[in-house]
Amino acid sequence: MVPQSLRNFFSNPSHTFVGIGIDNDLEKLTEDHNLVAAKTADLRALAAEMYGLRELKNSGIKDLTRRVLGKEMSKPKGITMSRWDDNQWLSSAQVHYACIDAFLSFEIGRILMSGNQN
Image (cartoon, rainbow, N blue to C red; front, side, top):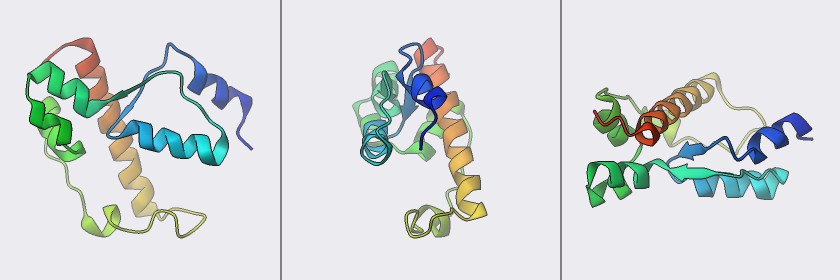
């Protein structure tokens, strides 16, 4: 059961949930847990608009990290291509990767939404 405090957090229009293909992720949360986000933004669209580069609409987190943050990101195929829905619990490597992905998405979103282009 999802706590009401988490439902309130997601439904607060002051919060914008960002990510690569964020609408797909939130659709799954809605289907599985009836959790609805009031406001979302796809990082690819934000980056394409800010940099005036249409090809950024097809970028992944690794490319956006390089472009927006000026940093390199490692994406171990053994983790990214592993089955994330096989077990009830994620492996420690999956949790580690998910935390990095979430942090980078937040930082990229913060920069793109503030309009501070690198």
